[in-house]
Length: 378
Ligand SMILES: Cc1cc2nc3c(=O)[nH]c(=O)nc-3n(C[C@H](O)[C@H](O)[C@H](O)COP(=O)(O)OP(=O)(O)OC[C@H]3O[C@@H](n4cnc5c(N)ncnc54)[C@H](O)[C@@H]3O)c2cc1C
Image (cartoon, rainbow, N blue to C red; front, top):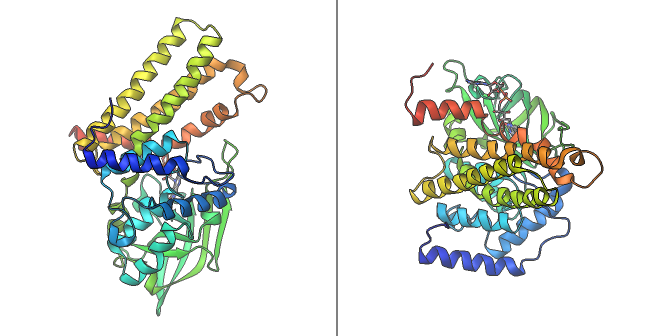
């Protein structure tokens, strides 16, 4: 089964494949996922520049803002082909799927011309400062506060799990600016990450990488012109583009099929029995189910914001987890002894994070129960 492509979509794919064949891949570039590590940043920026020069930067953004105005199906084709080529499809998730679309929708003309071109060319890296120690799933409970002082704002508080804060140029910051109803008193700011009073401390993850940070904000000054959208309307600004990355979730199936192929080779070479083979086959069907569900949503006109897309997030991250569990059974002690399987070791340790980032599995289940199936709220 393939994407049911219209002629113009087939032409889009052919153009992309022809470009990919000759695209200069910078030395040291690897498929690092949604966020580069500090070591990945230089090759990632060079790759973003290459994408830009080839006309493949921010493809889903409107043409008048430097994108290609690509449809959801074209974005899906792009994500799948880049996954197949084992290349990142953009510098990072936040700049392209969050900051850019939020600035396009809510930014002033000055903000758009100042920030958008530099995101597209990879000159600026962006991060997202939403979560706090006591505000993750319950984001509206955030306590970082911004108070107005003349023409500027003074911000103090703490953020956590901020991917890429240690090398970012700008951050999207949510801070409390008003009392009253929890969702209403929040404002979204563009935070220049090298401002005085910001201390970003990388957190070492269990997979050995340090992609995210604790960020301490101590009397940081933000000029008034960096408020994004209306004061006290930051919740609407922040929520307006959440879920955009879900349009490309099904593209993970390409990777999962490749991982299944690797495991099949091991199962055969090790002469493993029917029990493991059955589990392998079950996973294969689930990956196929993920891809088909994704295709059905896209061809039905989904844009990523629908509650139904929670099902894709859940399916994808559970497959990711179960693939690594199967790998522990297939590879046994070889997974940890010696250095024959570093990639599987990394996948095993990275899988739990995927089921937390962007909304935990429990939260996805609640969304499916209440907003898709219409079950009563507890
Ligand atoms: C790899 C990774 C990258 C991240 N990058 C960023 C980033 O760049 N910027 C950023 O702002 N944040 C980032 N995050 C943070 C992420 O958004 C939060 O971890 C996530 O929203 C969960 O919040 P929490 O960690 O505070 O857990 P909590 O919300 O405290 O949840 C703890 C547990 O309770 C469960 N739970 C909570 N509420 C409910 C409920 N109502 N019903 C049922 N169960 C519930 C959860 O499912 C979870 O199992 C990242 C996280 C990860 C793992």
